[in-house]
Image 1 (tube, rainbow, N blue to C red):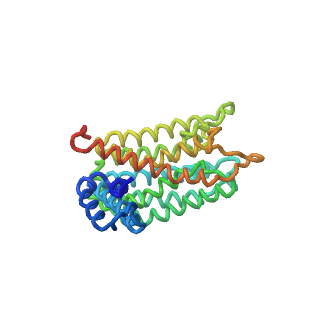
Image 2: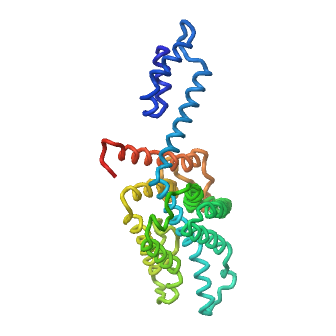
Image 3: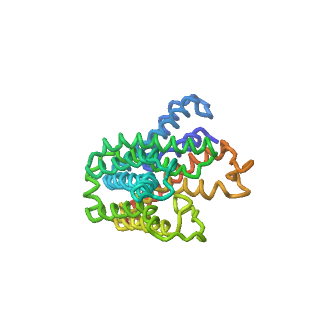
Length: 337
C-alpha cells in the first residue's frame, strides 16, 4: 500500500462532507511534508488525523442536534421521560396512601412506606412541572439528582440480587438532563399544544392510579399475577395491567400524533432505552450466547465484562445508527420527512 493510499484510508474516517471538501487538499499537504521514499505515515500524523476525525464527527453531531426540530424533540423527550419515571416511582407510594386512607384491614405495617419511591416521584414530578413551565435549565439540574437516585436503586438491586432487569430507568433518566440542557426555540407547551399536554396528564393519572383502582375491584384468588416484560413492572393483577396498558398507549398516541419530523426524532431518541430493555429482559436470558447468565442457588452470577460492555456500547451505537439513518433519509434528494 502506497503512502497516498494510507492517507486516503485514514481520511476515510472523516465525515463524507468534510472529505468531499478537503480530502484532496489534505493529501497534497501530507505528501508534500513526507520524507523522500517514505512509505508509512508517522505516528504523529496518524494521531493527528484520527484526532481530527473525532473532532469533525463531534462538530457534525453538534450541528445536527442544533437544528430546531432536534431541540424541540429533546424538550418533549425530557417531559415524557420525566412523567414515565414519575409513574414508575409513584405507583407504590400512591397505593400505600390509598390503603391507609381506606383503613386497610391487615394494616400495611412495615410495607407502608413513602420512601424511597416518594422521593423519586417528587423529583421527577418537579422536573416535569419545571419543563412545562419553560424552566429547562432548572429542570435539568434537578434531573441530575433524579439520575443519581435511579443509579442508587439499580446499584442496590444489583448488589443484592445481581439483577439488571430494571436498568432501563437509568438510561432514560440520564437522557433527561442532556435533553433539557439544550436551549429550545419554543417551549414544550408550544411544541405539543395544550391538548397533548392534557392527554399526557391523563395518561399519568391513569398509570399512577392503576394499583389503587385494584383495591376497589374484586380480587380473584385463582388469577395469578402478570409478569410480562412489556409491563415495565412485575406481579400486577389483571385490572392493573389493563390500566397500565391504557396509560402506555395514551403516551404512545401522543408521540404518534406529532409531526413526522418530530415523531421520527422522538423515536430515534428512545432507541437507547429500547435497546437496553431488549438486552436486559430478553437478551440476557438467551441461552447459548455470551449474554446468557448462569446462576447458583437461584442467585444470578455477576455480569461479565463482555456483557457490561454490550449493555453500555450497544445502546450508544444503535442510537448513532438511528440518527445517521434519519439524517440520510432527510437529506436533499431523498424522501422528505
